[in-house]
Image 1 (tube, rainbow, N blue to C red):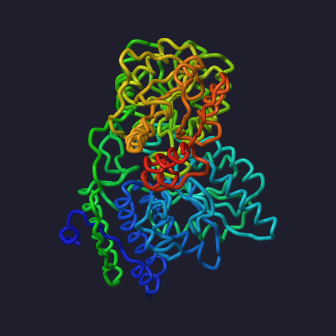
Image 2: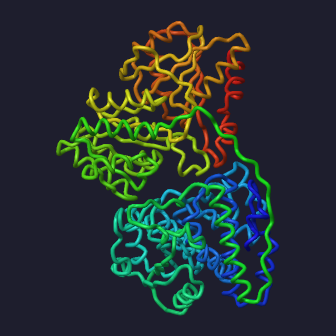
Image 3: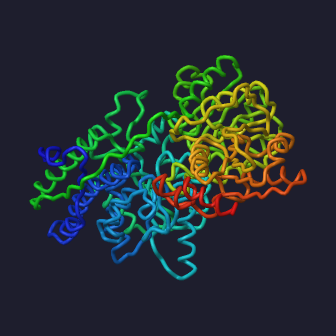
Length: 638
């Protein structure tokens, strides 16, 4: 398909229409040959969806597409009516590409990956033919056992296929789930491990080596099979063996695959060294990589159809518009990397722990500068946090990293246990808040204040800008004696926020960003503060001059500071990047009750599970854009 790039000029994308998938299935090809063509055509649409959405997971979608196609065409939607879901959830674009091709999901939704009225970033049961929510790792086998036991209670015998990532096997729940699967003799269970050898951006064996997987599963009394997961013939042979073998044991297929399979430069086997990070785990491809990848996919697809003497697959061109770039931005993660190195140079007791997010949490510079003081724990948050407790007991200062949605929940009991030992630990929860909204609710950290804030001897804060981050981190390490949880925004934000002159950190105190009269807005973090600055500009048009306060401390309010700043206010509005229940608002309410006042207090928080979508779509849906908030404030005052 040498002229593909010439036809698809810059700004255009290509996809394969649903009619072509129907033609493949209605053809005279052998069924396994149909699956081969179908899977390769689905790869084209996976690349299209992710490029069009601006984010997604190419690598694991490409590695699993043969498995997805085979199971859905030959098992789930055939007479056997088996159940299938992916536990890892990153490969949602692969599943969507198959379901839209089969017209089980409206085909037009390939244009709406990670859109509020389309297909969520991770599987969600509100999407047709998605049977369970996934995205938080490790839960799949346990859920599959529930399906099987429920079926048995109804006298139904139905195979349940659950797809796992190999990095996912580091989660402790996986190994808990294997015991009863064998004890209950759940031979309907077929676990498939997408063994593409990578987790996130690096090799599994470099993070937490899985060892001999076949022997491990055999030790848990599973029937164990192994095959090339990107070969339809190999996979079909294993499925036939399972179907024809009489056994009361659960089954596992270790499917050896290639992450990024189908595009040579996206395949993990193209990595030159153990040091190099894999570039196509998440995110959209660059324009150049998109066209190179699409061209390679179509070249392979047309070679396959030619070999099978099947008419060439056609594609459709879609024109897309370039998304506007935001000027004058900065990222807290970049600044955090620098601050962490400076602090570690001053304090030899600092030890950094990570849960397979070294790139996203900004730890690569630290790892390069202090390799002996960096511990990669893999996808095992409970183990990581308890390890930090041991380090702290021995006099070290552990700084623990993960996404806030995982760090605040999975090891919460371990965090509480650490607090009872009264040792100091710094927890860094990045990707905090409702944004980015594309990955969906499994990755939106909007209950972390509630789950962590009540832990005794721990103070939570969310910095508003780079300067605020630097001051708060120095305060946490050098002045504060308690454990700290840092809620860290991962998105770039406009540099509108400046700290007051002579500002000093004091626990429970904030600062004024805009001076007004007797109306105040309180919030925290760069995203909400920037929105509130737009709100202030809107309100000035209505002759309302509003105070804007950043209160970075999330689970403690200094009552003297609060009284001094708010005793003469008539209206306080609080914007909460969190569920309304259990957030910072409860601490503000306590402060309000500590002195006599006639202040009207109104909080704006999240009341329901937020949707997946673009950031703008989700903020509008939640009523969190500047126009909606301005309208609510005006209505409340009137």
